[in-house]
Image (tube, rainbow, N blue to C red):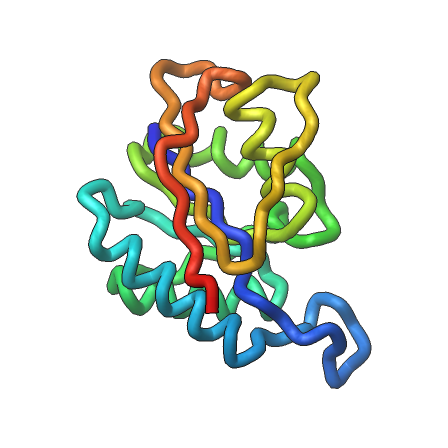
Length: 157
């Protein structure tokens, strides 16, 4: 299984409602999202499904990716910023029949998830920037500690 873990693009620090879940992407965040979508569309193993957090900044990021890949939208509440590592793992477990999948979510869970897949449960976290994509290759049925980071991408400006 190939899992693309994507942190949403650069977002405004505040929302018009004052709620974290309603924060929108900045212009830079929109450029990052579009670039990630174009990058994925150019990949030999593009994701067959992209699943995003319901938070606005993740949805805006995913919309650019869904458009670049001409895919239907898939949202899962378990990828929200208020959720944790076990929920993200359950999303991937629910879709393990899909060979290549992408998830769009938030810190710190995206970094924790990458570390869990590549290093195991006792590991720390690695840096994960806004608008960054990391590709984790997993051979076999065991996810935890068996993944290999095979690619990463981020539009810097």
